[in-house]
Structure formats: C-alpha cells, structure tokens
Image (cartoon, rainbow, N blue to C red; front, top):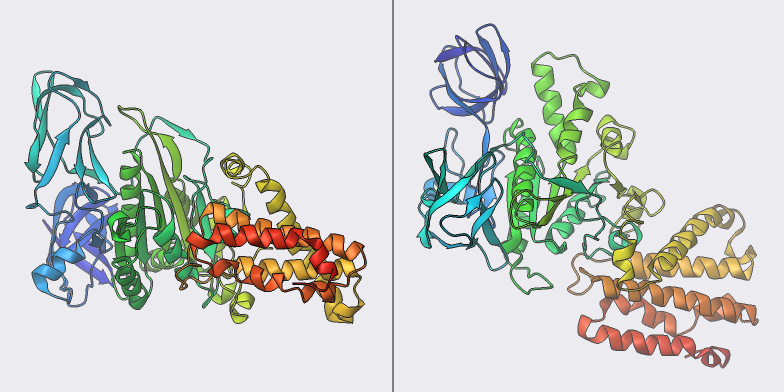
Length: 583
C-alpha cells in the first residue's frame, strides 16, 4: 500500500510502492480510480490514471492489485458497448444511470447470464492450446467458439452440455494429476499479441461496399490501411461505412477521442441497419469501444490495444475481423500529453520519440493467419485507422509514421470535399499494395478486372495531366480524342467514384455490380472512340441519351440492376443509332 506523492493531471506519482511491477493495475485515492503503473524509480511509481483526477489529494492511498491490465474475452462481447478500459457502458447505464461516476467498477461481461454451450469434443480426448471444445450461439451471426486457453493442454476428464455462466466450468482437463477447470471466459494482456501458427499473405478482397476502395484501391483481408484527411473530408463517415458494410464475420469500431455526437450516431444507426447479405441487424456482428473526446485522455491509448486484442481473439476462432480506429491522431496526442507530463525528451512537434514503434505495435497485429489448435482454420484481422493531420498537412509526424507501416492509403482531399464529391478519396494520391494479390479473387467475377481497373486509372491520370492545358487554352482547343478522354474521365468521377453514404441503394455496392458499372462506362468510352474515328464530334457524343442512363446506374435497385445494364449494353452496341442522331 503506497500513497500519492505528486499529481500532474492524469499522471500520479506514488511513493512506498516498492515491489510493484510495470503495467500493474492500481487503485488510486479514496475513490479507487483505476490506473496503471508506467514507470518505476526506487520506491516511487509513475501511474497513468484512466479517470478524471480532479479532487485527488497528496497522501491518499494507492493500492496495487498485483495484476496487469487484462481484456475479458467470452460470450457477451458482440453487440456490447465499452469505454476505453473495457467497462461495459450498457451495464453501467443499468446500474448508475445516464451519467458516468468516477471510480465506478463494472465487469466487461455479464457474470449472471447463462449461455447454451454445445460441446464438440468428448471425455478422454487429448486437447491442446487453441483447440475448440464447444460453441455458444452468441448472436444470429456469431457462433462463439470456446477454446482451450493459451499455454494449457491435457485430457478432457469431464465436459458438459447445457446452460452456463461465463465463470462456470464447461470442461475439466487433467494434466499431470492436476484438474483444471475451463470456463467460457478467458483473459489476455491487452498489449501482448496473441499467438498463431503461421502468417500468410493477404489474398482475398475485403468487400467494403465502397466502389473506389473495392475496385481501384482494394484492401485485402488481413491488411492494414490508413485514411488521413483534413477537417470536413469525411474520415468518420468513411470508417462508419466500412464498419457497417464490410463483409467480414465481425467488425470492431473504436471511437478514440472523437466527438460524442458522432459516436452516438454510430450506435443509433447500427440498431436499425441490416446486413445486405444475411438481412440480420448489423448490431449482431459489431463491438463498440467508445472513448470520446470528453473522456479521460490516457484511456485512448489502451482502448486501441483492447480493440485489437478482441480482434485477435475472434480471429483465432477462424473468423475474418475488421477493426476501425477513429482516430490514431487523438491516440498520438494522448501519448504526447503523457510524455510531456513525464518530462520525456520530445521528438518532432512534441510527440514522443517512440511514436513510430508504438503505432507499429498496433498495426502489425493485423494479418491473415493459420490459427493454433484443432480443427485447422484460417482467420484474419484487418486494421484501418484514420489520421487527422492539422491543416491537412500530411507531412506531420503521425501521418508520416503511419505511411511507413500501412500497405493501403486512402488520402482524403479537402478540394474534393469543397466540390461536394464524396467519398473524398483522391485517386491520384491514394494507393494499394494489395491490388496484385487480390487479382485472383476478382478474376472469379471477371477475368478482365485488371485491364478495366488499369484503363480507368490511366484515364483519370491523363485527365489530371490535361487540366493544366484546359486552364490555359480552354477545352475547345483540344483535339477530339482528348475531349473524349475528358468526357470519359468525368463520367468515371461523377457516375462511379461519387457515392452517397445516405442513399438506400448507393450506400453499398456489391463486387458484381461494382464491376458491371465501371465496365459499362469503359464500354461507352470504347464505342465513343469508334464514333469519333468515324467523324462524329465529341459534343454530339456528349448529347446522347445513353449518358443519362449511365448516370442513373448507381440508383437502380439491385433486383432491377442486371436487366437495366443488359439493356444499356444493347443500346451502346447499336452504334447505328448514334449515327442517326442518338437515342
């Protein structure tokens, strides 16, 4: 038992703490505020407190728990809402009401609720770490697989079938004469990556429903990506779209230092929206961590690691998991504040010198892996983080450190936002290193994916090169083939890349529809080239009625889309109609 020696905002120094360990969880003050030891010097411990320290006094007691910060893993996580240190806000609301009270303790998982457990092994079976011994139907979309904890093995002496709480044993393992009870709940250190057999290259597309991402700059399952952008460019909306529509088994949304109204909008919408594939409520495949800007700063850092630990846990069950973090800049700002209070040597722009390594410990926990244990299974954890550079300056330290780690960049452009072009992903500054690896996945839909994608990107690049000439001499001075190129690029931008997150149809585009939309535009471009070569002016091509039908493609309901495109292709192929004055 120690006592407070010094208080500096969320940093508390306690004395008489000899025997404590780094990252040990402690109770600070009479209110028993939750904290964590981040440094030791002699008998003094430096503690970061995860709650507001207003009112603390020097001399108040500090008690160590002897445990490091652990993440509770088990049935009851999916659909739940947690704060930055994994206290269930749902349970807290039931216990104390709508307002948080300092020092409130609440379990991450319900200790009283009974879950139906169905065993998948039998007594006498030899089991090892990671083996699946049974399942629990957690939601209509998630079967929670109960695994043998890491570092444990033995012979199943007893296994039960029925309803149990997460703390009651569902199996008993014997090892060297010891009987070990296996409950449904596990615990795992937040900062320690979970183990796996082997890591593989990401090769399957993460279907997000956003056309520019899925087709032009694809993200693979198990990949890592960043979305940097200035104020008003739609970072949060982009991340919300991914968390809503990504075709993974489970999505985890970490609101790290973002505005409370944005987080409230996320929570409200997920209670109403349905998964486009299964028709089930999206809430049945989501976990939320809400550590908003008005909550304690230091909890931002650990909230990120709690989220990735949850992602690894479900990955180990053989699921594909997506984690979105909004935003890593707020996380970095929290590290800068703590570093300043600890009087650490500052790096660039005051951020700690270990900023890059701390970011990499988060992003590198993504991946597509072969899970340990039986039965054999593959799982993936995909990580997407937003970055909020001040003044949209991508040369600032957090953005630059992130760019050295990630393999896909979705650069948001303030100029596009001012033009009301959403999503504001700049097609000239963004990139994806997964384009070649997901090529085989796309080829199952169409073997001309690469050619269509490359041609579309080439048109957009050439349009950017022609813009300077257009500004100087005007579009009328360009040759007809360049005018046609500008027309095709404009169609791609306005009728394909622009996508409304709030339109009931346009908000999500499945891969088949995605491919047909861009193929239709390129088909029209090729037909336009033939017509231009035969003497038709681009101004005449631009007046064809078929262009209006192309612009309406993204609003056509899914059940009518194939018929609509089929008729559209027929019209495009009838080149004689163009010669006779259009449709």
